[in-house]
Structures are given as C-alpha cells and as structure tokens.
Image 1 (cartoon, rainbow, N blue to C red):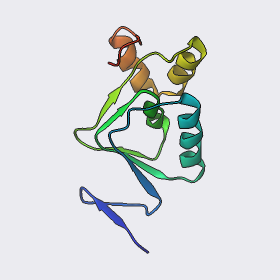
Image 2 (image 1 turned 90 degrees about the vertical axis):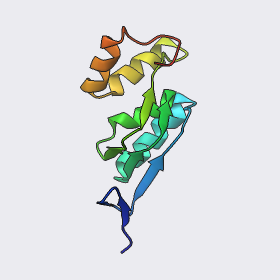
Image 3 (image 1 turned 45 degrees about the vertical axis):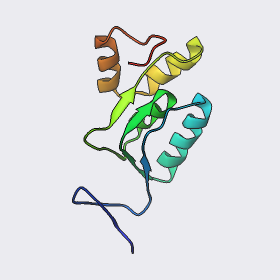
Image 4 (image 1 turned 90 degrees about the horizontal axis):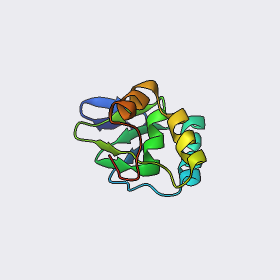
Amino acid sequence: MKALFVIGLIVAPNSVVISNDHGGNLASYEIQTREFEWTKTWVEVAGFCDSACTLFLRHHEICIHPGASFGFHRATNTNGTAHLLRQYPQWVRQWIADQGGLSGAIK
C-alpha cells in the first residue's frame, strides 16, 4: 500500500491536492465535491482556492495547508449564492458575515 507523506502526516492514498484553482462553473464543482465525498477522497488545499473551488470547504476529509487561501464572492445568480452559503461550514459563514457578506469582488 502506497502512502503519501505531507508535513509529517500519512494521508490516505485516495487523495487529491487542490492548488491555485481559480474556480469556475458552480455545478461542476458541486459534482466534483460530491464525488470526493462519496469516494471518501482526502482533499488537501495548498495555494489559493477561489470562487466555486471554495465548495471543498464543506468536505469532512480536508486538510488546509499553511499558506493556503480562499477567495469568496457572490455567484452569478441569487440561487447560486444561496447554495454556496448553505454548503459552507458555520465557521466559513461566520467569517463571510464578519466581512460584510459576499460581494461581486473576491474577498
């Protein structure tokens, strides 16, 4: 069995590293996030993860590397924005609220 060593931790062989991802189509990221959840894929975030990429924050099997960053903004429609907010864990929703909510610009 092959193991991946990251910062001194053994990570499951069923893992993916998200790095420098500008995001994209919300539906595509929703499908990818569900696939990772169903297959219990360990998600590591290294580098930046913006826009729809931030959906990965809802995943229970996640490692956020030191120096990783997330960029949040409103979706192109109200339903998409509401969906994003529902998917985020409470600590992310609280951070967004503390920043004044989502706007058209990445925060």
